[in-house]
Amino acid sequence: MLDALLSAFPPNDPGAPLPDRAPSDSWEEVHVLVISSPNGVRETVHELHRRGFAEVGTWSKLLPAPTSGEVMSILTRRRAREQRE
Image 1 (spheres, rainbow, N blue to C red):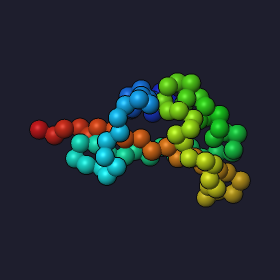
Image 2 (image 1 turned 135 degrees about the vertical axis):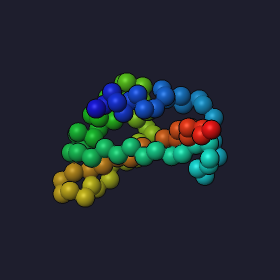
Image 3 (image 1 turned 180 degrees about the vertical axis):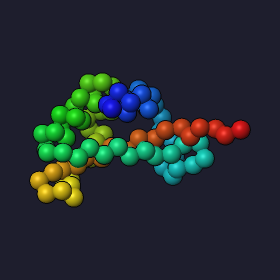
């Protein structure tokens, strides 16, 4: 499952220019959410970093999750929309 997530996005390029903030016809925002125990979220974020998916600092701080005892962290990525012909 993790490999499928990683293949859905190009490698992280921290030096790439950011598009305008508002989504447009050419790009959209994708939100990735990790929910688990605090250690589970941290380990997953670090594993995604080791695999080149996203820098650790690009994830949100740990936030309370709807399930008691769990936390969540959110990553927002931008991706190009597929061009329709």
